[in-house]
Length: 294
Image 1 (cartoon, rainbow, N blue to C red):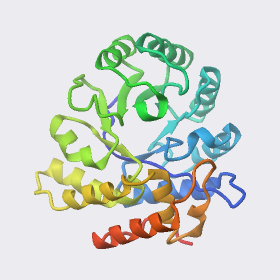
Image 2: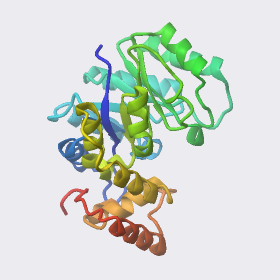
Image 3: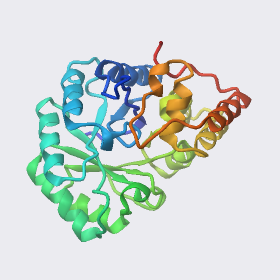
């Protein structure tokens, strides 16, 4: 398999007023991001509220996504703690020809590298055709991948464990593996990561920074002087002051009210924080059209 690289958005899920998943508009959102410059998206990642969306709605989306124009450009996040449900969901996705998955270890319980290796071993043995991007995000699941654990998984499953999204930032500077994709989880790490040999980024804020992130990526590979990386980092820094999901939905709802729909216990920013977010982005002259037309 060719090494995966590029700019990937952890795509937002678009919900109806009754908080059910709006399948068509969620797919439209992913297609908009690819049209704006993303090489692809991660659907049902943390930003997509994966842990809160019913499996039945996820499967409904996969069925329709399998017939969409960019069907080969997506990672599918699992967002499930149950090993059995993870495997069953992946089997459905695989039957629809989705083979690339973004998988975080389960949350809640405490465990170490040995248990994590067993978790992924059972997944790979059940779905040997899968290509897995490990999801390293200690803040959400309570576990942080060690370099040794990643190397052991790749050694054991070189054809299935193909990359890592590093949102704990303990891997992207020091992990070195041949034909293995490393994606920092923030635009703040994009340029440095590329300089270190990383493959790109998978980030929440690419829902609004797709064009700028792609330009930084393309300019790096063409040898063009960087002209927009500083602004890209400043935009990300503004969003980092808030819960990213809340901030993104509040920001995108300025153009389309459908983005106001968000699953509890998540919420939009309060009125003061939303005003501060919008004003800070205006101060940066950040006015990209970033959401679906109303």
